[in-house]
Structure formats: C-alpha cells, structure tokens
Length: 185
Image 1 (cartoon, rainbow, N blue to C red):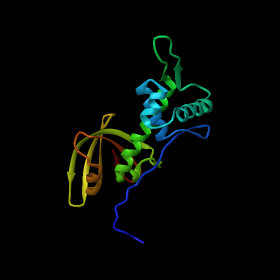
Image 2: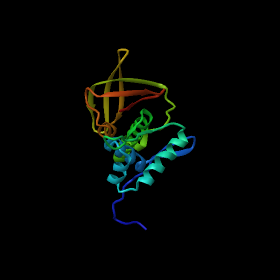
Image 3: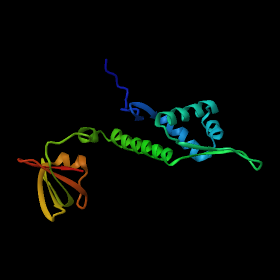
Image 4: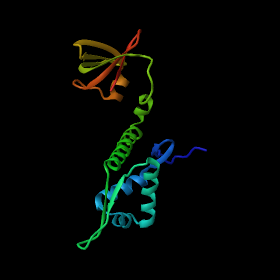
C-alpha cells in the first residue's frame, strides 16, 4: 500500500575488526565523551549511562583489538584519576566519523547513489578543469582541460550538466570509453 507520507533513506554503520563489531554510533559517542571529559565516570554521566556499562564497552573493544583505546590513570592525594583516548582510540573515532560524514553526503544526495561505489569498465579516466559549458535544448558540450595538458570535449545531456551542477572552473573526471566520453564530478 502506498502512502503520501515522506520517508527518508538511512543506514547504520559500524567499524569491525576480524568480523566482530567494534564501534557504531553509540560507541563513537562514548569515545567522544571520554575525549571531552577526560574521565570515564564523567563521560558515562554526561551520556546518561552507567560507569559499569562504559567500562565494559571499552574493555570489549580493547580485548577484541588486543590493544588499548583508552588509557586510565589513578588519582593521588591531589585529585581524582582520569582517562584519555590513545592514538588508536582517536584513530577509531576519526575513522568512524569520516564514514558517517561520507554516508550523510551520499544519503542526502540521491544522485550520488547512482554512481558512487560502482566499478566502471572504462579505465581511461582523466582529471581536469572545466573550461566551457555550452547548453543546448537537449544536450550540453563540456570542454575539460586534462592535466596532460590536453582538452577533451564530451557531449552529454543538459540534464546531466544540471544534476552534476557542472560550471566552468570545476574539477571533474573525464571517463573515456571507446565510443564516448562521460563526465564524473
């Protein structure tokens, strides 16, 4: 049954190690809170989680990776202890956030879903700068100066130029097949 309700495309991502999940959105939030608060207990409190849950979560990741992602230290007479992310912990968090940003871009731009991640049979690809765009009624001519320096001209649909938002000065890739040249941005 079809409805008029708007729906959105979404997905969940997580990092795995040897086929086992390490961190997803919740894990990234835990690592960020530890990084910000410099304390496991303060991080747990800021997230509304128990200290035990956060501790166990970190331990599971460290056991799986056989390496520390959080370094803890005990307090002395002058104050309490603390925690900080190791370089590996920072790297995991950064990698997860990078994937999250990429997925947000792809999911917010339906046009990306048509091309991103596909393997192309065309192996002749030249990166270059758009020198001119001439739009006709149905087709458009895009002149691209490739890095060799050589100028390649592709005749593509006007719709493709508009969907890719191709403008003079844009950096693009000219993908050459034996019968045609297509443009990727």
